[in-house]
Image (cartoon, rainbow over all chains, first blue to last red):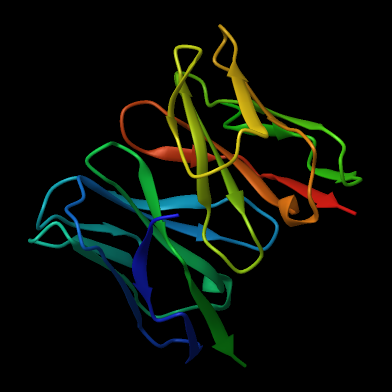
Length: 110
Length: 110
């Protein structure tokens, strides 16, 4: 099925470091969503973005809806052990179908 | 608010059998979408139900069918199970924009 281009695939970071990941699409999206998924669980919505250029924060998380409407990024500041997991971007296309990235796996080095 | 609930949480079936998975949406949500998530992959859209009708469908064979009831709850049916159908099946409910997920049903076909 159709997917967004999400990068990086995985990240190994030290606790306390900042994290950045992004998603790009070849077509325009109307809404961008960022989810976190823990093993064996369903994805949990972190941030929703509705307008081009929108910058939204949720605690240590910040996400932006790209001006071109074809990309979005998610930043996590001062990472902590519970940030470990897989982060997915998702966006509603013009048919209001939710399209997903392949995920970014975040691993914190001890 | 109970959120999105799915049942069962785990299931083991034999090739060729049929399976029914169930989903109760978040209170106030009228749209239910089903996704298949293989290990290490992002969710793949199966179909979406709104007002008891299938509104959109992803690239899945007719062996995958569904139903939505007047109370907005939904079922996913898979016939003639194949080994490749083993996956985490996620249900998401949505109102206008944000999609919220259940914890998923882990289906193993042996």
